[in-house]
Amino acid sequence: MSSAAPMSVAEKDRRGLVIVHTGDGKGKTTAALGLALRAVGNGMPVLMIQFIKGKWKTGEREAAKAFGGLFEIHAMGEGFTWDTKDPDRDKRKVREAWEFTKEKAASGRYGMLILDEINYVLSYDYFPVEEVLGFLRDRPPALHVVLTGRNAPPALIEAADLVTEMLDIKHPFNEGRAAQRGIEF
Ligand code: ATP
Ligand code: MG
Image (cartoon, rainbow, N blue to C red; front, side):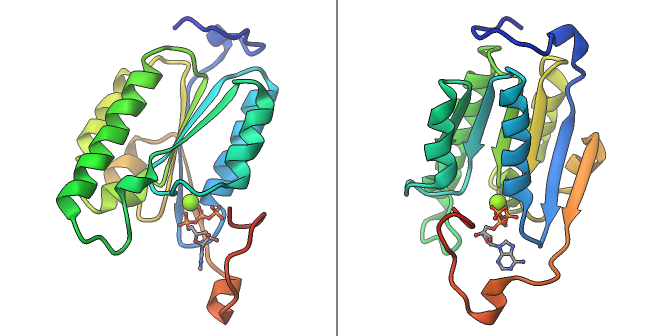
């Protein structure tokens, strides 16, 4: 794997991990962003693909711009909605996002790949988990991959090196308090 940007963590010193953040509690995407911050600070280029988030402005996308190309976030989330009217269209959009992900990853530029909300997409059978497992198997050995979202498929949990389940103990949504900028997006 070649890299356009200098890496302070030599590839030979990295053993790529498959990391899964799942569960019903808040923090899956937030924890992935924390890992990205750590990776970028060590000179490792990060690619984050958001499979659900829409095109609206988010704090993470604005902040990523400050890292001079080391942290790329792509919101492909248009392709997936909670109350879909056209599942076939959504499937096509998810497929497009997945092809885009593979193409970008094949550049060999990244030290970490974050597939945000992909677990959720997989749990809806929008594309087969086997494709993701195949991608993980064939990836460059130094590449870290973080997969977030509720309902991670058992086969993915089996294949992962590190799995964390966020446990929902309390959330302001449950008391009717709305999502707020700086906390949720
Ligand atoms: P975050 O992006 O804040 O880390 P998440 O990735 O763990 O959250 P998602 O399943 O992606 O959670 O949910 C997205 C949105 O739902 C976020 O705005 C989040 O605050 C909210 N949310 C997460 N967990 C809960 C919960 N247990 N109850 C209600 N809302 C939640
Ligand atoms: Mg999330």
